[in-house]
Length: 192
Image (cartoon, rainbow, N blue to C red):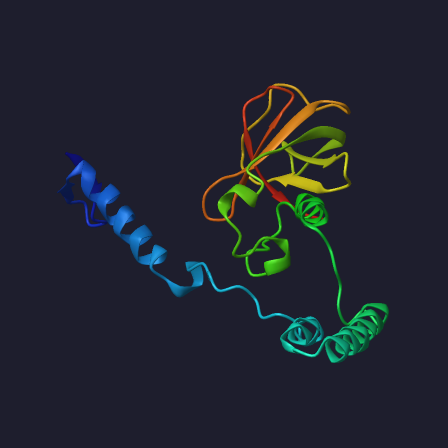
């Protein structure tokens, strides 16, 4: 049993597991929130692409070919005007890696709605530079130009150096951790 002060000099007794139970209930309620629900429905097909697909339904060969020619030309014009963009899975993964640390769950072209296997679980790279700020916190840049800053009060035994290996991975509720140069982990957030 743990004692908890009531503020008037009296002590109350509380079971050690009750705080954990209350925390678990809060997480369950949060987990049922629509904000945390994953939308499994794929995004709608752009109109320009759908018009190309619709050409397949034309039975007459000459009319189908004319439809494809017309719609592909319109699609190409839309691409030149940047109304439509095309990219493959490798390009999406490269963009997702470059934006690791920012919230992208609602953007389907960066993996929103994809399977968890598509999500980056751990980013391993090297430190480009590192500096101390706010007394004993660390701010560092990784080789791709992303800047991360420490948010907890953990003091590292030695300052990170250029070339140190760094692993950044997600924690819970949108937080991130970094392990720099084999030292203990620190909580970090992406600044840019």
